[in-house]
Amino acid sequence: MLINVPQYIDVEDKVAGPLTVKQLGWMIALGIILLVMWNTMPAAAFFVIGFPITLLFLAFTFYKPYGQPLGSFVIFGFLYYFRPKIYTWKRSPERERAVPKVAQVVKTQNTDKQVTAETLHGLAQLLDSEGTNHDGNIDEILKKHSIKR
Image (cartoon, rainbow, N blue to C red; front, side, top):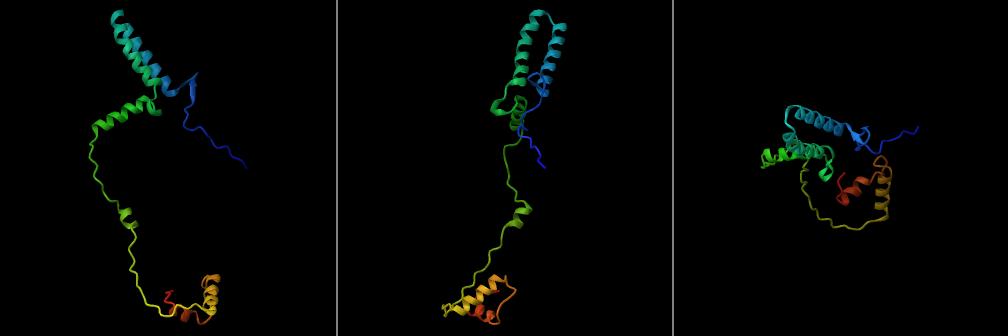
């Protein structure tokens, strides 16, 4: 059974023409503010104050610095300026448990470094059977070559 996987999940749905829900909300808010200003202010003051407000709302609607909406950009800017700038590193408990313990390496002197066919056969049999089948002298071979099981 084939299932279609959505590919453009970061693209918002268009609601009214080319406008998304957020963009439409900013435009409706601009319209309401301009309507209230038109009804409460003289015409000269309306145009002087309304023009910068319109530019501000259009910027919040359409401008995307660094690929993110201007509203998010402004919020992150305020958070950056009002949060403390000093970061104190704290080790998490999970990190302490994840640090491996250093194993002590024991060096042994092995005088007999000869590998015989019998030794190889016994080790191959042990490895092939994943440790379940081995001949009787494998313990001697492992002790002889100082390999701990």
